[in-house]
Amino acid sequence: MFAGEEPLAGFTSLRLDCLELCSAKAPFVAGSCLQNLTDLEIHSKDDIIIGSVDDSVQLKRFVAVGRKIRLGALMLSS
Image (tube, rainbow, N blue to C red; front, top):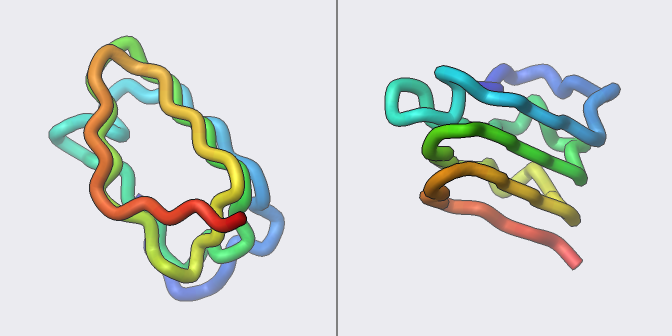
């Protein structure tokens, strides 16, 4: 979970190779601390669960590679 209040200004691109993160035990949640994130890539050999991505995060590119992928609220900007 990335849900702090202060932006992680250096993060415009993030790639995660998941084991427990992005699973039913710990779904991926991105809050306003990742407001500069435009590129998100998540890889897992198991299921991937995206809980939510805050409206302040303006993704232009999203890639998820896993056995089964479940998406909650996810916004892609143009």
